[in-house]
Image 1: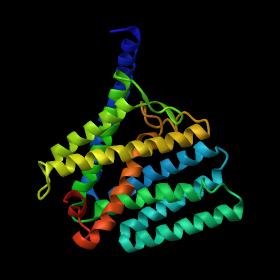
Image 2: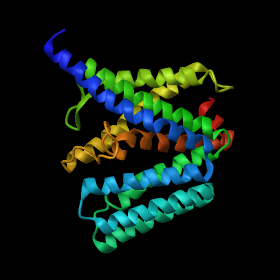
Image 3: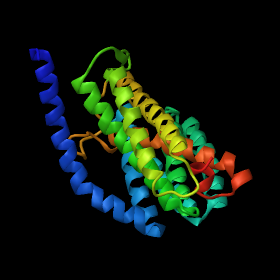
Length: 281
């Protein structure tokens, strides 16, 4: 093995060690709150999304303190509205987008700060809370969580150890096609494993669905990377050792949660608002 390959393996092991320690500490808490659902889950999602909102604004402008307060308030309100149900959540989301865009124009604030931050992070907040609230929502959010986690881990390992052609060198020079393949494989494995516990579905469907969500997760990752590159920022924050900021860790989760929620809405006309609308084809 040449020196460059040895260094890549060593770097991967070092990064994985920090990520592993963080995951071991956080995973039991996250899984317990996910299992609990209800208000504890809503509160947890609200706190995480507020942190991501603050990081979003810090990437674009570290001076926009008032905008941080406004976005935090909007994200808290969308979480509470979503906890109340689909109608309230969707209604407040539309209202929140209009108001945040209006305030941005009124005070001469960049649309990407308040309006863009709420439109994107607010949509994910709404999505993940409502996904958990439906019949068998625990299994659906559990599936989403493990697919995104497996995608991140396997993409990191494959990208660091195999390397090769860059996936999007202008946006994110460290991401490779090997990493994307590894991420898809990890998500497919999760799909196969989850099919053993989810009735009325097939392994093939969940393997394919997991692979598609892996690609969407990587797109979400690239979107955040493009934002950081535009504003010359390395990490969105430093709250999670080995990961950077909360937004760095959950960028793929945002995109996947929104996608799964939209699929649920589209399929609900035929299947109803249940997890089966997404997990069973």
